[in-house]
Amino acid sequence: MDHDIIEKTKKTAQLYFKDVKDERPFDLWRAFDKNLARDLSLFITGQMYAREKIPHPTRQLITVAALTVLSRLDELRLHIQAALNVGCTPAEIAEVIFQTAIYGGVPATNSALKALKSVLEERGQWPLEENSA
Image (spheres, one colour):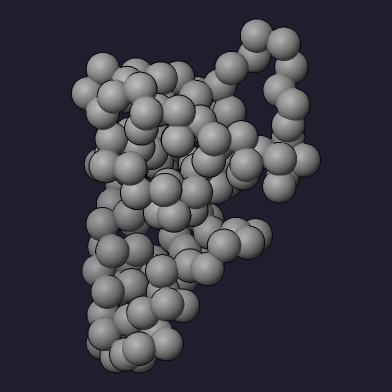
């Protein structure tokens, strides 16, 4: 097995998912199939998310937008946390979520904003300063 990919996977997972309170997908996958969990993690985290073609904050904002439009709230919560961990501000995340209303609809936007608020509450970052988001 490629040692570089293993190290990239560990480094990227730590960067994105440190202090995440929710169950991480890797833990769920591992409960069912350890080998497949490793392979998925090495590909998704060690190869896709570790790519340096775009900055990590940009990559996470794209992920937040896609998950909002798809209404994948569990994954969205995870990636809101990852976005905050890589330096995205709550205001940037909220703006991306608002932008998706055009393509995903207002109900998806509202659900995503509730997820953002919940994550910020858990991190002690709510309420936001007036007009900051």
